Length: 123
Image (cartoon, rainbow, N blue to C red; front, top):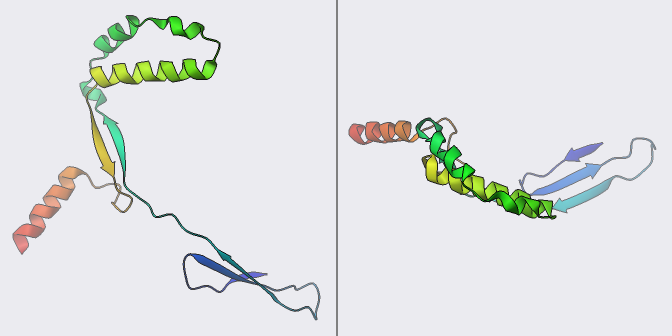
């Protein structure tokens, strides 16, 4: 039986009791670990509904794809991904958004701005 007796979030103190023998002594185990702090990160948001996909196809058709004959499949896969992302960046509108771990996922910028305006008018 393992019982967590710790009140701190980053230290686990467990009491282990051997129930198979009647006269055994209880053991205690203490494990200290660091929980990484969640940080903000950037993410690219693609606005597909405003993309020029005909131009995307045209630009991909004009790429010199001879690098595919390379024997190193990792390099080929990386190069294909780079070509496709660079072309998509030029032809599909996108923006960089900052994702904060403590933000509520369903809040949008419009909602946040309207909430800010609402609270500023009430003060």
